[in-house]
Length: 348
Image (cartoon, rainbow, N blue to C red):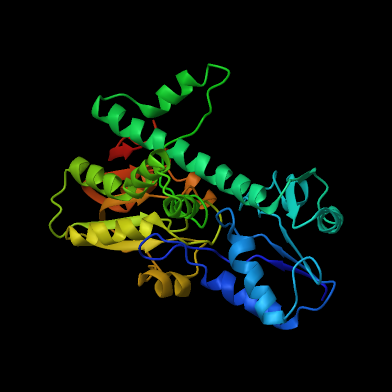
């Protein structure tokens, strides 16, 4: 090969610090095979400066070659939106950057073979890295704002969905909704930027506060559900439907649903979890949770946590058939608003 593209995960560790293990190991692997004239392009989401300060020295050390004189490096952040048939790899505008102008031309030429959308040429690698971070941090902060408002309006007895619908009548309102933030981007990437800022002595209170709000949503949902339950929670049985971080995909990384399972079990509830898209072995390996192969009704608490297509058509009669007494339906995504009559109902 002469053109390497590195797309490995860039998670955070248990202390929310950047974990570059996969990136470093992949870079060392490429370095062993790097030869003069080769290109290495990174797509993994990283803080500004990471490609040039961490990856390039590893490439040079492992290959004995020098950047610029012997090989070229580029950065083109991945923008895939899982389960989105409208915005696909080929029709999403692609940011491209490289260590010099000649390298930028070649990186752009290669991506132009497979990307029909615009190629946006950044002036440097750090700008491209910062652009990707900005995309995800902006989304994180906006969701955090809606989560914070939801907590307040719920206490005031105000329906958040109606508030958003009313606010959306203004042309420049951005229609974000409250919810659990999971996956490999939004709950992770802001911490890369906060970490980089900390090393420079720069505080990022808005970004940090947004992360704190989003990280606390699973606990908020559990507290709200328990407060709304009429059945005695002692010996109560709960069913959580959905553990992937997004509808109709199998990705379970940073699932807030797994956190909810732990919190409910700590409160003494027996919890079954089901998901038609998640791999049972991966769920057990990652979270120690065994997906229920069959339902074991009746349940005192049912939580539809993910808006899978398989769940959208369910109705009041179905939930009543698997519940008992004054059971509660927790509808995190608001799929059944106005449709539940015979159970208690709670939604964000």
